[in-house]
Length: 215
Image 1: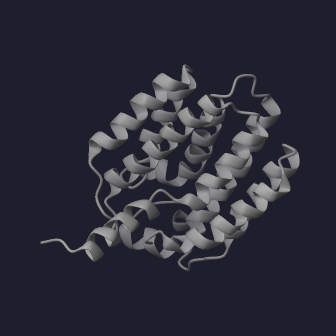
Image 2: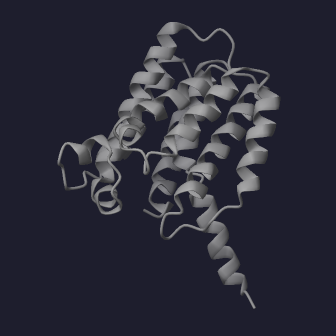
């Protein structure tokens, strides 16, 4: 019989896979863009659907497995709520990104796919300017690349051909990703004129949750 401690442990594992540290950064970005509640809800469902689909596809050690019906439901509801073709772009890029462990070329370019997912999520907000598109693509792609530098040793063991692995690097650089995450949150706050108190809250959430995700 499953104990309450085991249930809580599994629940905590599931929640940690949803990466609160990354989600609060997206919230700051959506606030900066002036997204409505409906647009934020739609983009959030698509984002969590992406994360769950990614975990379902990869099945990494130390992480609880998800039922495929969860990410399917989140994508369907998110797409219906968004009323935007951008939702289909999110799903297409997310599906491609999830194949980075199987297709070497996608592995090398996965950081750009990830940046593209963030752009597509923001395109749900009407009137997104080309400058915002370029800024989001550049910063989010760079940040995801820093995540590849963080995971060099794990990706090498698993045969994932990310750009750092393809370049022959063998040692993790752990601090690059969290530093870049804090930086993107700062940029959204400054460029989008977001209340600085929200930035402080986002940084606190990032500091409290970043290490909880099993890696």
